[in-house]
Length: 119
Image (cartoon, rainbow, N blue to C red; front, side):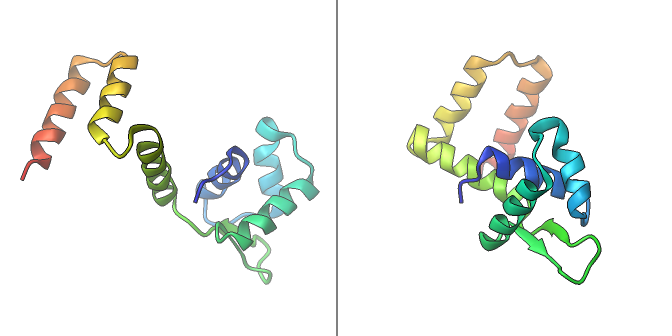
């Protein structure tokens, strides 16, 4: 499932703890989004319908993430890999390495990871 930037912002707040009240989420998002309480509530209910947010209506802090950050990140990586690089992981890694500076320590770490992956 492709997440919007706004959904990522809401989930980042929810991933930072166990559960939250609506006011806590609004306060956490205020520096980034400047959304009203109504807007945040609308996002939360829509995200619940998508299976992204869990709402426990019997709790004073009813909002929590229904998906893990790791799972969402994996889906985003897979989508990028398939959409842009036609599933070629080596091409994706090469593009990242070409476009960014990397320290010798990071190079050694990557080499070790690749060596460890060999069967």
